[in-house]
Length: 245
Ligand code: NDP
Image (cartoon, rainbow, N blue to C red):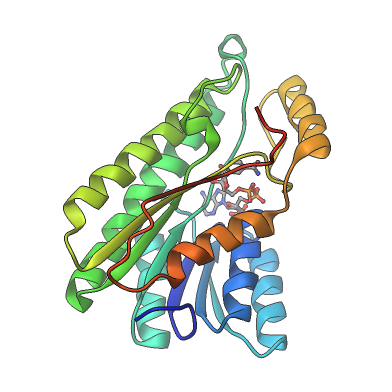
């Protein structure tokens, strides 16, 4: 199967930002979507927008840190659309801060969301992909997986883990599966500057407002990886604003 039309795509973190833009982008090209996030009202708004435009989408309230929630997301795809072709693991939190502030709840949330959350997605989707003899993981990391900038070390470490897990998964996936890492640079979303230290958040928001690219830039990169023919694996995409160092 190639192209986007008719593919069943589950997306975590689809209630805003990059996940929402990806859902809209894929729906406009005929994908059937299963959208997951915690905020039910925001999730429903995305589902309603897609269905109002004639697209196909269902929502599932999920917290990616909970194994059973990811299983429910993947099962929803199979129950509703008969299969799961792609899992986009995009849910994330950018609560950056200097170590001295000891914001350990934020550290825990980034580890749980980016690492445990990704593993929960792999655990839920891999058996389905193996049964189908086809499937694609698209994992959203960050340019922070390539370079550490203070005070982003915990965020960068968890995104580096996403990169490493993705490459290991790719090596074990065999000829039937595809595994893609998409690493965005600064993207104009509400997630930038949400949580973490107020100073770091304010700096991130200033930087975002100066240089960020629209989330549609990441959505189309994800779409490019999905639309390739079965035997073609786009292993890694880095997409950033031209002015980002
Ligand atoms: P947003 O805050 O707009 O989106 C984050 C999404 O993740 C929301 O839908 C949120 O939904 C969801 N989410 C967070 N935690 C959980 C959880 N535990 N379970 C389920 N869903 C969760 O920010 P972005 O769109 O910018 O972020 C999307 C991804 O892109 C993240 O992984 C981020 O690290 C990455 N990224 C972003 C960059 C940027 O500059 N914006 C740059 C590089 C990477 P809800 O709160 O409803 O659960």
